[in-house]
Length: 181
Image 1: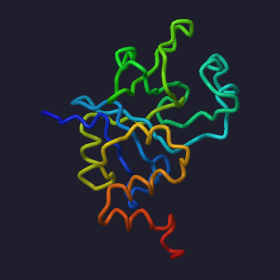
Image 2: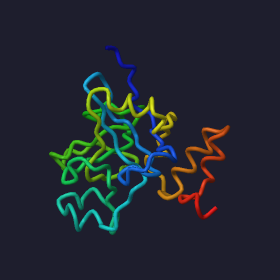
Image 3: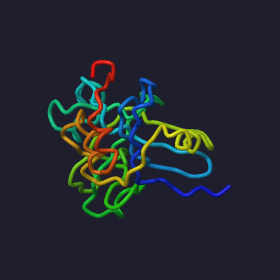
Image 4: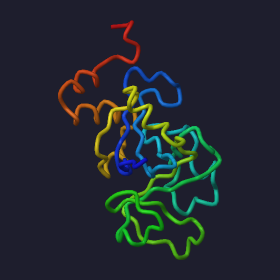
């Protein structure tokens, strides 16, 4: 089975996706192949500051910077996604200048323009994401670097749908609970 990689694409949760882990989320696919897929939820900031949750990464975070919930898998795992000055400095490139930061040596950290710290990630087994796409659980859209670092996490879902255009502009305006409409 050959799988066209969705790495670097956004998965925008369709209104019919009611799983609380993914309701109205925007997920950046960071890896995708025949064995499955992984990604990071971009619009779920936590209430916790990086320095309180992962004090060893205080050197990387601004004061009171919040950690983002990257997904329900391995929520104790910490991943840092960054926009690199030189993308070759990233041990794992996702798309363009974006890739993961190696956290093993702060003295030898590569220069980055901006970065975001995530706890956990989203994961799919072999064929699982494809099944979800066939059920229309997700809407695909090419990712932009600004999506990863959006200041308005609450507005990212609607913003990406409006950018996609067409009928998705209407979907973007749907209330979270259609019964209140």
